[in-house]
Length: 329
Image (cartoon, rainbow, N blue to C red; front, side, top):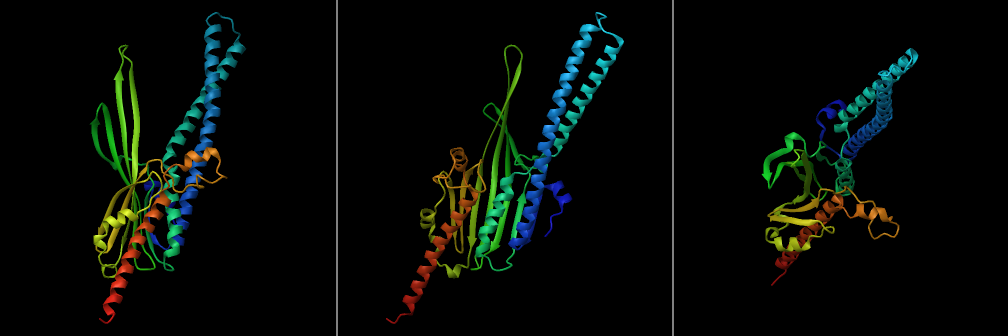
C-alpha cells in the first residue's frame, strides 16, 4: 500500500492491513518524510538566524545614529540617504527572518516523533520470523503529538496547578502467527500538562509550566482454549514467569480461557530500541544515560516470550495428561 503523502500531511495517521514487507516499505516513506521535514526546519532555523540577527543589528544601529545626528543637524544629505538605505535593509532582513521562523513553525506537525514509526519497524521485523508467508498484519499509528487537542480527556485543578489530562492510544499492531495464535500489541501514552501563575508584590506575573507522563504497553495473545486447558487458572504462574527490562513495571496480568495479556508501564522517555547493551565495553560513556531509558521494543519482545513460556508449559502438561489417559490401567 503506497502512502498518500498529501492525505497523510492532513491527518498524520497511518492505518493499513498488509504483509510485513509492504508495511515496512510504507514506514520507510514516513521516515523519509520526517527526515525531509527535519532538514527543512533545520535549514529555516539557520536562515532565520542569519537574517534576523543582522537585520536587528542594522535596524538598531541605524536608529541610534539617526536619532543622535539628525537632531543635532550633524549629518549630510548623502549620509542621511545612506542611513535610510541601511535601516531599510535591516528592517527587510528582520521581516524576512521572522517570516522564515513562521514558516518553520508551520512545518512543526511534519516533524514526527521518530520513536513511533521506529517502534513499529522494529516489532514488524521481529514478528516477521514467526509469521506465515504473506500473512497480513494490521497496523495503526497516530503520529500526532500526545497533546493534540482531541486527545485531551479532562481539565482539572491539581493543587495550585491548572492541569490538562491527555490520553493517546497511538499504537496498535495485531496479526496471527504461524502457530495460529492471535497477537495484539498496543501502546497508550498518558500526559499531564500543568500551568500556574503567580503575581508578586511588585505586580509582576510569572507563569510556570511542567509536563509529566508515562506510557503503557500491552501485549495479548489469544489461542484455542481446547489446546491450552486450564490456562485461566495460571495467573500466579504467569505473573512469576514474566520477565521485563530493568525499571519497567509490570502493571497487570490478565488470564482467561484462551487468552493471556500483560501490561507494563514505561517512562515517557522510552526509546524504540537501545543501540547497545549498557555493559558493553565498547559503549561510550555518553551513551550510558540514553541506554538507561526504557526500551519499548525489548519490553514487548520479553512480554511475548513470557506469555509463550506460560503457554508452552500449559500445552506440555495437557499433552502429558492426554498420554496418561491413553495408558492402560
